[in-house]
Length: 405
Ligand SMILES: *Cc1c(COP(=O)(O)O)cnc(C)c1O
Figure 1: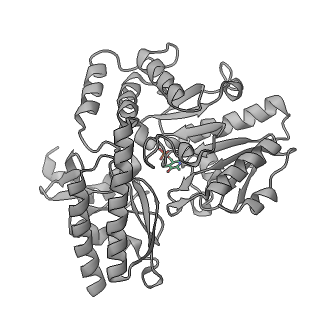
Figure 2 (figure 1 turned 135 degrees about the vertical axis):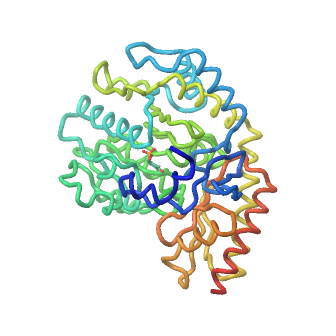
């Protein structure tokens, strides 16, 4: 099949229509730059949706992948392997965790977290303690269990019957949790420290502290979905460290592989004990190639100068976006942390986030949206400052044209 026939139109002919990809087809990347089939260059502030945390074709990641590729790719969990053991040990050393379960995607890490929470309550307190409290607007993945726990009904619509035992409270509203939580029924509370897909909405520190206390009072497990906020995204290795609230279970994916599929569920030894032999599993979970790449990602991102760099880059990007927002009257607020920012559209521009994305593409800058009212940025954690400045210039041109039209 020749290259010329690999077009955007072909997508509609051979792919299930659940996505609506942009008009260009990128073919090559380096750092925070991407080139499409026509050789047009873009600055990447999408980061593969908070995944390519070290940019594209990072030499360290290529090295880790190539080295492992020449040794051993896959065994399945009939055997363990050195990269998986090494990465699990590193994650335990660097976090609250004492035990790790590997999976391949965020949804699967959450699936494991939710199953573990149910199983733990079942073992320690009985089968009636099975209710999961989640939050409106939250996003936890696209499996049937995780769309049922997620707080966006549109992702569940038409796929019912959904698994039961899930209730939704209001994010950043402790009172709404108090009304739902009980010692008899609640097995877990699951929350994103910063709601990503829901609009880049940070949790109030008091809210997360309050959830920790409520969970303790009601013998419920606190689960942090850090699929989007984890692995350096906020300027901390995990966002719970920024909030200083320790969960019982934490899910990680996206940036964990820097572009290679891998996910992990972290927990304590006491809680982990409820997933005994045979209770859960994954063929690819702990794959040697994935873990070798994940190792390089964690070793790189956890360096203090990298994490400090995220904070400096964040300030630069926030300031630039706020200035554009004020100059053209398009943003009312820029929120989030580190390299996960949400620019909230003013009333005059509400519902038009996608227009900003398309206008950006025309000027050579790739951005994301989070819903229809928020422009989201989730670039590489090591994006060069010069690329941030140039991306801001390009984005300003895009906004200027959009607002003049
Ligand atoms: C992306 C995301 C998920 C789902 O991850 P997949 O790898 O797409 O399954 C779950 N939770 C949060 C917070 C996410 O941002």
